[in-house]
Amino acid sequence: MENVNQAITGICTFGKYPICTDLDNLDANFAVIGVPFDSNVAFIPGSRLAPRRIREASTQYGRGELGFYNYETDEQLLESPKIVDCGDVDILSGQHKYSFTRVESAVRKIIQKHAVPVVLGGDHSITIPYGFALSEIHEKVDIVQIGAHLDWTDHAGSFYESPGSAMRRLSEMDHIGHITQIGIRGMGSSCKKDFYDAMAYGTALISAKSIHKLEREKVLEKIPNAKKYCMVIDIDGFDISIAPGTSAPYPGGISFDEYVDIIIGLCQKGNVVGICLTEVNPQYDPSGITSRLAALVLINSIAQIIKYECVATLQEQSGAKANG
Image (cartoon, rainbow, N blue to C red; front, top):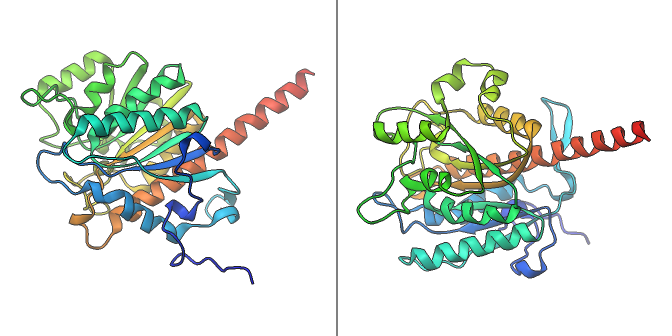
């Protein structure tokens, strides 16, 4: 008798996709990997618990080879993609150098295996080793960040790798191209000097308020054109009403639908080669809606990347036939 395989049964993997913890034998289009690390947080820890909670929430949406039917767009998504859950990076709490080395090594291996690395954080500082690993792509990669805060702090005392320094550290990497930061808002995001440094670098800053007011096309026009993009998602970029479980929630953030518009538009502009999601803090959200939001953000992102890669492939094939 064939198993029904309901969401509540089985091992809790992301979207109930297969497990592959041996990266040397990875064979997939997308590799989901957890980074349960929050040792660099200065104020409210707890994001180390996020990978497990996001996985739990994602199992309800595990459709496997059936994929998803989107009623609003009348299209079938996520049919038979090669997605695997690679478990978690080996972390040593309190030892960020060891942990960062393991994060960078794992992401590099995933890229070498020609899969898109999808990281479940963890605090925002893990974006730093993730960013170093993107050099494995051997092309400039543009960063599009969703977040409430600028995260361009240079250092705190002698510490240069805090969550608040993540975007500045990315800007210092030679293989990183343009940076676009979406959802920035409110007092306390950063000091004036940090904003001026970001703008001097060429960062495109798009406030949450402008997202609410502008049409999608106008928002996308503010994102520089590129061949390769990496999505860096700090969950506090979303409004506090749908993402209360994070270390620094803030009202006035973007909605889920606004995010979906952004990822669709980004996939139309270029190839999304990585996703790094951080700062879900389950301890401060007993309802679990933040973990659920994170799971759906990732599922929808993967679905759109697959869809538009397929569209681009079909267009290339059509062009080749026409020229032939």
